[in-house]
Image (tube, rainbow, N blue to C red; front, side):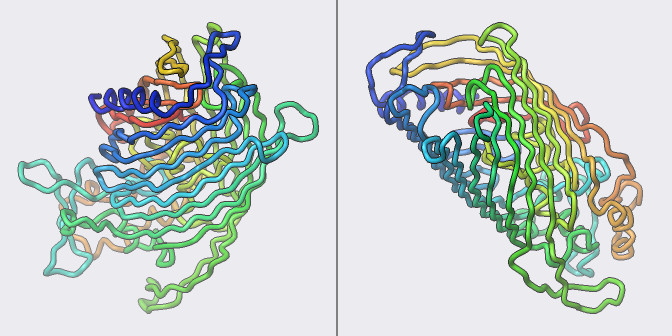
Length: 481
């Protein structure tokens, strides 16, 4: 919390130094109407229970034009360079252009993400067992597949790295929406996205004597030899209905998006791998062409004017046709990205309080419910400010499984090489459980500037211990929807 309050103080001071003073023309609500340029260079200081403390720098650049659209703007550009103490780094720039397409918006997002300890809990939600603090130690003198599992609980034992892998991602997305004729609030959307993934086993020195779940997925064939890295090129088309009153701090209205993404495996390559049926090395290449559907529905219902808003988000994504690699399955294929990360259910952008990226399948559905209470409004350093609370409830689950039958049989493919005390205790790949709802609850605190810039602190706890224990904190930017 100390770092959060330091961040707020820096925002006050920095914004006061760089914001353009355009006089104090007020609108009917008594808010200062912003005009022209507004710069917000900021140090990035945050915290995420899954990623650690965050530090770096970012800049928000707004152009409000003549102020007639306020709090709307002509364009916004954001650039961020930051890193987390658990090994993740962000190099990202995104922009919204409201003055390029008539009755429309152009969105561009370019980013490179390094995650030296990317959370990986397996496929199909509760079908993957979870053992808290499980350490699987390497026996250097034995066969590669042999191991001695143990629970990290005694003083001096190493921290577990079992549920982690190394992942690097490059992302480039260009999307647009334009009003359909003269139909108010109804738009068509088009987009082009490119993703490059580089996936590897955990490569941090303090975990070098441990096996990981990712290792066992590779050994058993649940992750194919040609899925260590790959490229995904998506062509998106969708329908959007948007009647929200504000983009980043809505108090009323509806947002609906239905997007189809055709992903063609344009960059082909062949990988040598082991054919488990013959024991021979063969060339492996799956052509991961696939079609996905992603739908979201946001509803913002005013309860007490602009002071209290009940809102919820319903979302679903499914693979409709083709074959999808595991790394692409974890991405949410929306037309526009509100948060930096767009990963599977679980974590700061979807299921707050739930283990990050722990609900993975070909189809996933989720729900987020919030009560947004704007408890105070004030003016400071020529800016309009608001303080808000948002109690919340999240839920999600896998609705379309991914390689589930292979997952059920995977342990049999490698158990002859394993050494453990109790098979029931150490079936690391399949729990035998049916999928169900993963739920969490918590509360957030927001500081909002000019209805566009939102500093966020959220705290949430999973309601099932299999989804994680203890309170998780997420300090960063923006509402999740």
